[in-house]
Image (cartoon, rainbow, N blue to C red; front, side):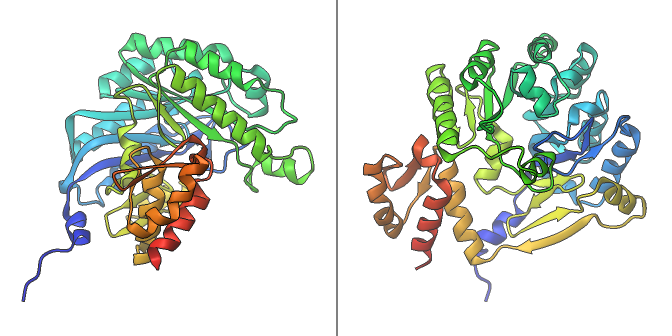
Length: 381
């Protein structure tokens, strides 16, 4: 007897509307970075583009009806005009919807009038600019390759080229030993009138320059109090400037939420290309080999670049439903048991409950992991 398709089966047959492409190249490794990158003084653009063409040929792209394409890294802007070649390959193999969001991450020192013009011609309409700080000494400590002056110049260049959706990345919660005026950084960012701001609290990972400095006793991670103070200052100032704090780390002007990143937080399927890139088909997550050289070698040999595939269990789905739901101000549509657990947090100022939906406040965002763990436990009973 034939039954109805399950929601999970239906999801796996739905069109893929989101594509992530990992571009691993960087001029140098930032002090805090533990991403999959390939430090190159000269970027092998032609080889990389050829490898992307080989990998996309391994996919069934007939179901790819893309609403967002996101080039992340690494530093995608180091491809220069090669960005257009990558987008061209995608267009030749899949459908990109009219009005799709095409984002690239960029470093300020890569943003030239020629590069920006080529990106716009390729269809790029959103740029996430890695500013990180407006303090020269902080940029040097972070091993950033750009100057403070190049940030404003890059924003002006992008807008002159026709890119009207510009996001700025900033890092907060630096070690106490690093002199930094976080409030001044926020003001400098607002002066550039960005459409979106992403904030990342500094974490110290073991296999990074910063991790080695900590092991040697040169730096100590910021205290929880410092982290919370920086986070709340950003929340208050950006909200006052008209931004919507729509996700733990992200602020957008009205209508400027990141459509691509929002797909991750709502559990939609997405495809991915490039070294270390992660995909989700509705049933399972898979990820590619991390090292650029290994990824490129496998593609030349006609081999799969998938390193592992993980089928989501019931427990995985339960925890992800809770965690992802709580990440944004759209909130978590909750069960009775979850609402009962969350009620005391309303008085504490961590959550709001409206129409059976639990939404974290800014102070609740700071406690996301603990709140999600408690609600997941309640849902599993």
